[in-house]
Amino acid sequence: MQIKVAGRHMGVTESTRAYAEEKIGKAAKIHDRDDMQVDVVLHVEKNPSNKNRAVAEVTARMKGITVRAEEAASDMHAAIDLVAEKLERQMRKYKTKLVDRRNGKTVVRTAPGDTELPPVPGEEGEPRVVRTKKIEAQLMSEEEAVMQMELLGHDFFVYTDADTALVHVLYRRQDGNYGVLEASR
Image 1 (cartoon, rainbow, N blue to C red):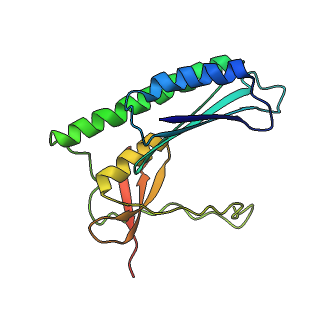
Image 2 (cartoon, rainbow, N blue to C red):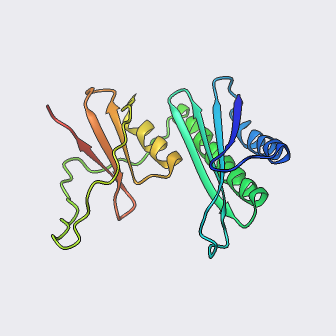
């Protein structure tokens, strides 16, 4: 396991670096894999009216899986403690899902043929694209995509379906279930 600690627009003292490596290392040892790469980014928000200005972000990458956690607190050590706890919970959740999958338990699926569409925004103050991000849609099953989306804490996830080799978008519905948008050629 490799842990990299960096500061965004700030320097990181050696004591803070050691503290982050120790705390995050304990949380990441739940999987204890040699191929795990853990990136820790520390920064301070510029807004002085925000009480929780110290922010710690952690991204742990293993073969095919990414786990991300972010927390803010009044000081950097407290933010590191909070993000380490969150990372540990997510790592345990992922490990439990791996064990459940091996034991034959399944993840809840959506109903086939669901065609519910989100409301169309009006012309006044219509949203516009302000950022473009390139991703690699990894080959995986629907269950793996659900697990990856939950680990990242996102409301949607783009992946390439292992059965059809088509790009799919998995999303969280308002009722708490999941939906899948299947691309066709």
